[in-house]
Length: 87
Image (tube, rainbow, N blue to C red; front, side, top):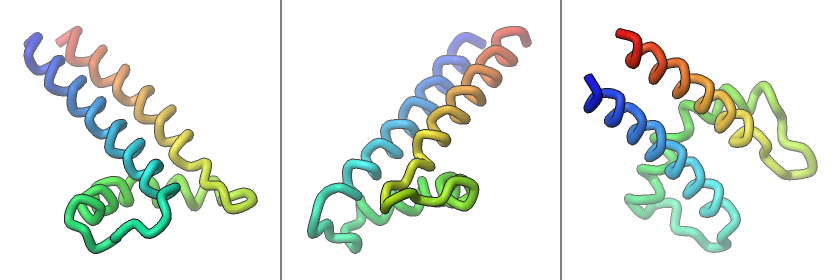
């Protein structure tokens, strides 16, 4: 069961880094949004970011929804890992 906890933890970590990469890409001018890696990052992260963007509209052109996503992901990660640990 320890390997499952490890895999789930790695999955959450990878997803956090994908969101972070998307944030960095949004700051870079002239990003080719048709590049396969960029399209992959957007297609994987958008379903999670979209609902939070509706809850937290951008203020002054700055999107704060990733901060809320990071907090919720950490809460869910801790809950899932704790559940797996006690099974």
